[in-house]
Image 1 (cartoon, rainbow, N blue to C red):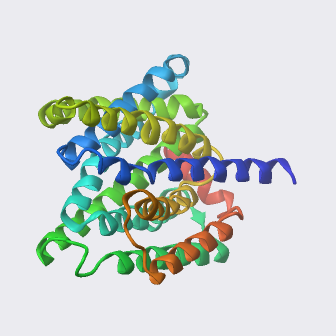
Image 2: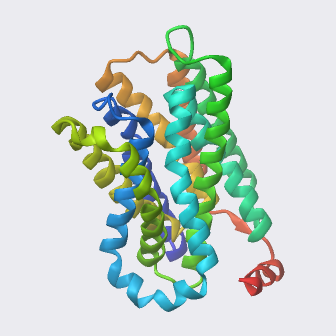
Length: 313
């Protein structure tokens, strides 16, 4: 195995670790039912982002001049970081956990591919397209399996609003993944790029946390959930995601995170006690096949266009 293939596989592994950790958030949130979805999102991404910035502070200081030169990527990525948890958890509140997760995570690979196609000249091969299609079909089957008369979702209007918010979350997720990778491609180390992007985004989320986070302090259980969300899925998870993002294209990384709803569904069965129909298990199998398809690197278009894009940055 050559060095490029080894780095690609390590990148895939890093993103997979992140997806597994992120998949625990829904189950963890069930242990703090009195805390709003917005507060959960703000504490998870806000504190998690600040922790990333704190740990990455030496790297950020060394790369500060480069970050300052590329402040549009940094600022726009940070805004997307701040938008994502509010839209993501709002989508789950309105449309249900399964639909919100499926739309938010499932739309991100397609939106990421569109962003990379427009700005980076990335050409996705047939194997990637097949893998992405299988993953999205798998997410659709999971959605069908877990939504029905027993699901307890709201009215049709609420569901449509939740789907719309899920698409906003997917776009925000795709965009901050792309902007962070652009910073890395400009020579900024992964720790500095991710730490600065999530640190600024975390600062933006602090007012939201101050306004909505009081229930987190009302019990030890609520506080423990908040700390877990910030430290494990968001802090450790995004460290793994940043490691992977430095080694694979953003569109590939966001597609691999389709494994997140699979983990969430499995934990719902094992921990929460929900039952997953056969259709749901079929969806999980398709997502696993999707991950196998995504083990192959994607091809970029000819250098001519890539140079034209880089010259504008």
